[in-house]
Image 1 (cartoon, one colour):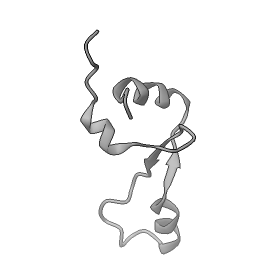
Image 2 (image 1 turned 180 degrees about the horizontal axis):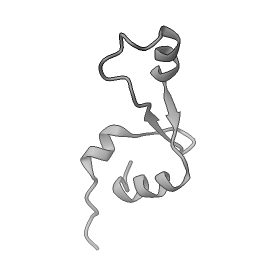
Image 3 (image 1 turned 120 degrees about the vertical axis):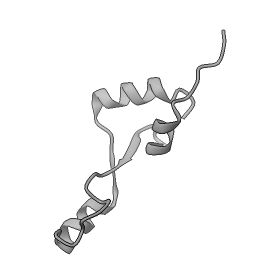
Length: 65
């Protein structure tokens, strides 16, 4: 059986935790941040756990992550 290629775009966007969960960055933190309150910017700053069906997709795209 040949090796499966990893989708490099997905590999750069997601991280796997020690317990096997996938983490992603939150949206709306690229530009035009002056309109946004500091409180909202802080809330969007961290990473969050990926939801159910998305995990299946990421596992298919990144089999060795």
